[in-house]
Amino acid sequence: MVDLKGQYTHIKSEVDQAIMDVVNSTAYINGPAVKDFQKSLEAYLDVKHVIPCANGTDALQISMMGLGLKPGDEVITADFTFAATVEVIALLGLTPVLVDVDPDDFNIDISAIEKAITPRTKAIVPVHLFGHVANMDAVMELAKKHDLKVIEDNAQAIGADYTFKDGSQQKAGTIGDVGATSFFPSKNLGCYGDGGAIFTNDDDLAHTIRGIVNHGMYKRYHHDVVGVNSRLDSIQAAILNIKLKKLDEFNAARQNAARAYSKAFENCEFIKTPVTTTNKKCDVENSICDTCDCHVFHQYTLKITNGKRDALAEHLQEKGIPHGIYYPIPLHLQKAYADERYNEKDFVVTNQLVKEVISLPMHTELDDEQIKYITSIVIDFVEK
Ligand SMILES: *Cc1c(COP(=O)(O)O)cnc(C)c1O
Image (tube, rainbow, N blue to C red):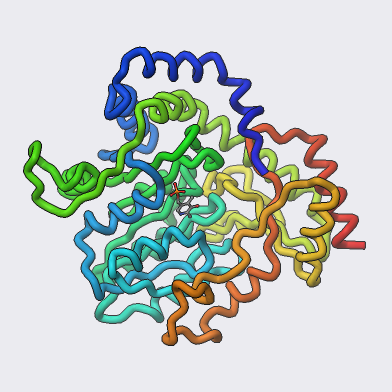
């Protein structure tokens, strides 16, 4: 699915040097590399504060702690996402409220959010799934109307530009009150282990969060709030500092690969390619808009609409072509998150998507020949 080795060979000398510099410096925890990376990422994202932490799941949890959400508060998020998003909500004693998603872009359904809002609702967590930014115009509008906090789960969309209705642009993850991301190796900006970060433009919130990641300390050995220990290692920060400089190039390579995939599938009847429909501006059926960067293709995910998805997965397995099914079970049907409040009628889209989606290899090293080979095998199997 990813070719981390291929990418590493292009940046090997720089990365090896950066790692050895940290090793020689012995500044393994909170060394200068962490501060450097924080500053570079703040500049790249055009956000006031980046707070590095240990992983993306921590980033989500700490964001919610920082916002002062309390047990019993309801937090609305998408039913179709990785479990980390809902896990931290539950772990903090908050009440997760899962809602359906949009069948075209797989992101949280705005009308479903609106339907789920109650007097106890305190926050919305849009997940920019597969690298496509959710409809943030609508999310922010709803949040303003109902006085809700917005926590963007940006683990899959770092570097994506969101274009608002008025034409202005902002980086994904910097639009809500707070954004959380992951530097897991296969993410668009991945390190060589675990890592994560929190973004915010709110000075007070940034201060609160900086204490929380450090055992709730604002002054050494004074613990004002219950915190956690969540740090980005200096070695990982040094690697990320090198890779951040190449993030736009990496994302462009993913977009090119996505374009080539979608071109190959253009005339297929049962293979639906990803659409980038932010603001319905680039709403061209079966195509990827050339001028819009609202999708950075963490995954390239197809819908197979003639019931052959599982058979295709088996066929690809036999042919040795990597593929993934993200996600095979909706969160509201997972044992840990099932709840009698949920009604199957409210999850028509996710219940269908889990049967249709399949993701193809997506990374920075894909070439035309690989894409030609993969797409011809998929088309021959599904369409014939
Ligand atoms: C990867 C991911 C996370 C969690 O990140 P970790 O660094 O693995 O903890 C959270 N949300 C989404 C949507 C993800 O894809």
